[in-house]
Length: 202
Image (cartoon, rainbow, N blue to C red; front, side):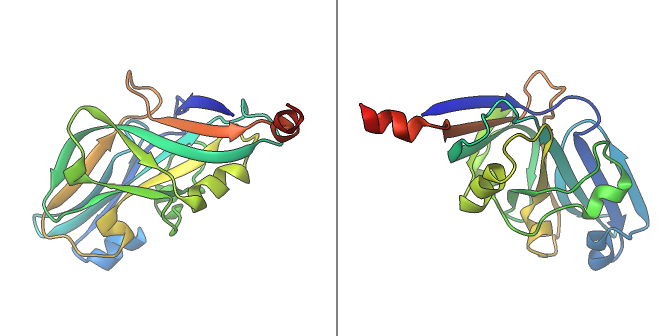
C-alpha cells in the first residue's frame, strides 16, 4: 500500500467563475446578466442580495502522473483550506468532476459534473483551516479511470447550487488554489502494480 499527497496545480488552471441574475434559474444556467472569471481562489457561492442571485463555481486540477500506471486506488481525500465562510441557509461544499479548459474562463461556468464525489457542510468547517472530504466510490472511480493524468479536473459547487435550492442569503466559502501557501491537496491511497502478487508470495 502506498500514499501520495498531491498539491493542486499552480497557474490559471485553478480559479472560479461567477454568474448573476435577478432570476435564479438564469444565473444557474450561466446565461445571467453578469459573468466573470478569476484565476485566484476556487470559491463557491450561492447568494441572494440586492434583488439578484449570484453563483460561484470553483475549479482545480491535479497532476496525478506520479501514481504508477496499473495501480489500484483504494481511497482518496480531497483536502481544502477554507476561509470567508458564510452559511445563511445551511449549505456546504460539494466536489464533482470538471471539464473546464486548462485556463479558466467564463465558458467554464457550465463545465461542472452533476454527480457528487463528496461533501462537507459549512457548519462542520472552521475559518482558516484545512477540511478533509473523503471521496466516495464515484470519486475513487474517477481517479482510477484517469491514472497518468497531468491535469485531473475537479469542480467545487455550493450545495444549494448543486441541488437547485434557491438561497435567501449568502452561502459561500473560499477554497485556496495551488498558488496559495495553503494549497488544496489530493491524498490518494493505492496498491502499486504487482503489490498483490508480492504480498501473496510472502
